[in-house]
Amino acid sequence: MQQAYEFKDTSKPLSETLRGMIDGITGETVTLRELMDAVGEQGLLLICALASLPFLIPVSIPGVSTVFGAAIILVGIAIFLNRLPWLPKKILDRRLDTAKLVPALEKGVGIVTRIDRLLKPRMSGLTASSTMNRVNALGITAGGVLLMFPLGLVPFSNTLPAVAILLLATGMIQRDGLVVLAGYLFLVITVIYFAVLAFLAVSAGQGLASIFG
Image 1 (cartoon, rainbow, N blue to C red):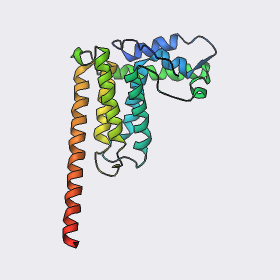
Image 2 (spheres, rainbow, N blue to C red):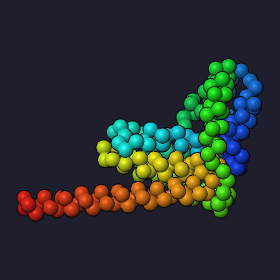
Image 3 (cartoon, rainbow, N blue to C red):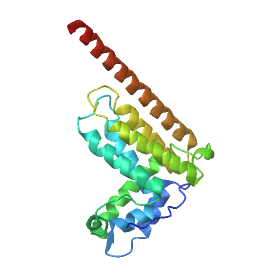
């Protein structure tokens, strides 16, 4: 059984978390388990944010949403349970060459630093407590479920839940409650949009049935 992890507070910038992680890499090799443990909740949230990016266009590539949606769901559940997401032991404990890994991480810090500048702590009631972060994790999980719906060819069917996931994850990273609230708004918009699509599909089906009945 995988051990539980007490994630560190995420009020500090993500770039600072990554910098601390890089400075903590001292040996010739490091495992994925050690890296994920060092980054903690922010790392898991960043995974969700990055996985949502391919869908920020009106129509996404069919089939991709199923894979990425499933990954987002697993990470969301992991955050809710305060655990690392389940991955095969041979992947978690694979030794990585730090001489090649650290330069890549250094470049990533520069990108993340620019992202940090767009967000700021506010409306802390939506992000400050572990209870709210568990609720937010369920919101991310719900976004992953909506992302998996086989509607990739329908305009905005992937875009809307992807925006929700991106806003929830980045808002949690920087304790930006306003951005988290916007994420929930997009979840609601997604549910309404899907309900309208379902209503139109049923109405069209009934119309065809009456014509050919």
